[in-house]
Image (cartoon, rainbow, N blue to C red; front, side, top):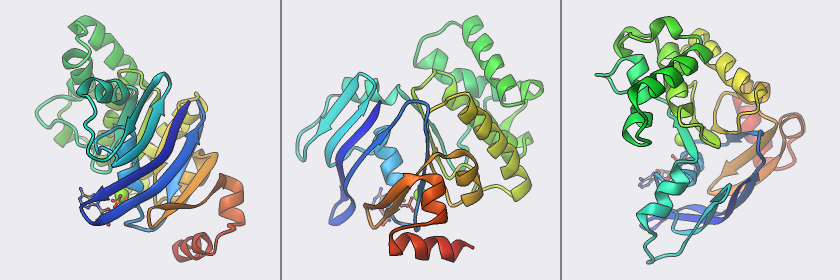
Length: 246
Ligand code: ADP
Ligand code: MG
């Protein structure tokens, strides 16, 4: 249901993604792992088109867009794809001058044009789902990092995206706070939320991901079921990387 075909991304002379082809099944959770600079964030940003691929095709459900160098793609097609995705960032990126519930409502009201009562109802349900109903009216600055990230997850899920993209969702957090975020993500995974997640956190990856993609130097060095890749990596690069994290 999500398909990337030969995605290439260059930043000037820097060739960051060198032909990535992947499929993510509906309801699956995929961990993107690999060394820093390997292209994980860029790949996530190419899925929701925060970065425009230099070439290749991104397909999410019915929406599909192909890119070629020097050919501009219409804003409408980009929006259509982007709306199928929700993104969670390492540093939460909440709107500081909006309360927790206003953060969750924001996109529903301004992008989707929902009226306030409908958006409030949806946001309240989502805050409950991430265990923060009692913090609806809190300002982000008064929340712990773990709580802020849970609000960010609720915000990303608000428009019912087909896929939740997470870029190092726990790496700005102390282990204890990371744990509460992992619990929320694990719950979403059990409920069948499709997720693609870049992470250094192998505990997070092995707890919730069924699939692992090992990205190194802009290519997929290895991919497969999480238990196989983590237990018995085939590629030498994967083996060395996993050993370095022990
Ligand atoms: P990872 O998330 O795996 O650490 P990134 O996708 O962030 O890797 O980065 C891959 C490479 O692309 C790095 O060399 C990084 O410096 C480069 N890069 C990422 N974003 C940009 C950008 N906007 N402009 C130029 N280079 C970038
Ligand atoms: Mg990154």
